[in-house]
Amino acid sequence: MPIYDAPTRDMQFVLHDVLAVSEAGIPGYEELDRETTAAILGEAARLSENVLAPLNPVGDAQGCTLENGVVRTPEGFRDAYEQMRAGGWMSLDADPEYGGQGMPYLIGSAVGEMFVSANMAFNMYQGLTHGAYSAIHAHGSEEQKRTYLPNLVDGIWSGTMNLTEPHCGTDLGLIRTKAEPADDGSYRITGQKIWISAGEHDLSENIIHLVLAKVPGGGEGTKGISLFIVPKFLVNADGSLGERNAVTCGGLESKMGIHGNATCVMNYDGATGYLVGELHKGMRAMFTMMNEARIGVGLQGYAQGEVAYQNARAFAQDRLQGRDVTGPANPDGPADPIIVHPDVRRNLLQQKSFVEGARAFTFWGAQMIDRAERAGDAEADAMISLLTPVIKGFLTDKGFETTVLAQQTLGGSGFVKEWGLEQFVRDSRITMIYEGTNGIQSLDLVGRKLGQDGGKAIMAFFEMVKAFNKEHEGADEAFDRDFLEPLKQASKDLQSAGMFFMQQGMKNPQAALSGSYDFMHLFGHVCLGFMWAKMGLAAKAALAEGRGDPAFMEAKLATGRYYMARQLPATGMHLARIGSGAAPVMELDAAQF
Image (cartoon, rainbow, N blue to C red; front, side, top):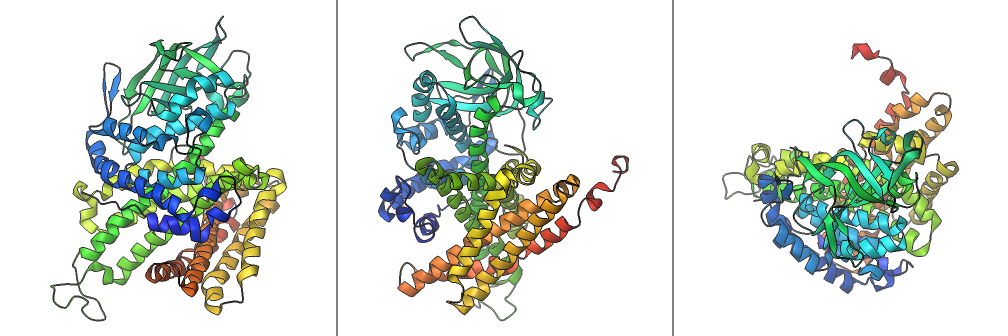
């Protein structure tokens, strides 16, 4: 049975020592003192460790079943779902006007990490519901908000998003699902959607599907797409449930991982739907849900890496194999624990340095969302828009890589189900695919986000890193050498890549797009390097002032030095690949593959 120990101490370090949340000047953050956040995270940790984590292998082994149109979730999921509801976890950062607790998005992210690490498949049910809530909250009419939001916030009802169809995924302009206007102002939705997470299940009384469809006369491509609320059960005027709508689950996908989540084929046979937002403007409304989901998926990537790393670390500290080359570390035993071996330590440090850097990066991004929404900060909004594909793409690529490294730490034991590592590998693999594959994230980053508003956001990022270096250089020679100098070089690599795209983009767009994936990773490494510099500074200050656990702070500095010395130099490799242009990628004729 795999273990999970919620990393609340590290979360507290990021929240208070690095981000200084209670002093951030964001409305609602003044209440986030150490005692308050410790209480919230502590309760979430207990639920994650004692309820959700033990169900993770159960959900993987049992999966979901479809019987006469009804999907049954794995044993224990319904009880866990009710505990989540009763504890108010589904309403944590929702609008108090609709029954939410009004906590910042950042706190929801911290809690969400624990839930994902403990049981990713289970947490997807409430994650999709939160996304549906956000889309309706942002774009729904007042009547729609009153009708649907209180029950979505409470968890009595759940939500989904329906985009993909059998013949189209990323190119949503090709969707065929139709919405025919009805005399009462509603629409009749007809079509089929596939790969719909939590599309049908037995956890909630009603499921509110958000469905993309085309109304006749809307034109070709994405400009003709509208968004509709299509409830599983129609809702009466008094809020009670009415008759069953014409939407059914036509099948469950047999998947590599996340077996505990129902991934459904959904059939709409003239189902009653209600327009959300403006006619033919559905993509704008759906992207509210998708952008939130992309950040959530980035979180899933490193959260699976976290739990995998914990199990790899425990194994390495316990498993006896071979002897330390410098002399026996366990002279009274038949062999030394494998953590003494340099290559095992390299493996573990690669995992640890990524996970801790990714946590800080994601929390920083969540703080930007709060700053944009709660303080109306347009610059923060632009910055998180730029960083969203990096959070999603880089953190899921590296998160999956981390689970594989953790599996490798266990050797043969990592390959068998008993130890649980192979489930983390399988479950994390989907994060690189859904909510837009990582290749699409890189194209979005380079083809759209980079040049948006004249490149204002990326220039602001460069200035932010430059200002940080300028403010702190010269005070500590070791810190300059170990943190600031590597960050400067990595930032220069990122700027050089950006200049290459500016010079090549218009005259040779294939040159830019051929390097987009490398640019996403280059950018991701710089972001984690920036976070490690911030964490190193915070740990150094805590040691100087005698705050916190000295061993924790010293470990933080050592882990940061590892990342800056062994991982951050990858920016040079990515820059070299980008500079090679389109020729190596495009030279081969399609028939020669």
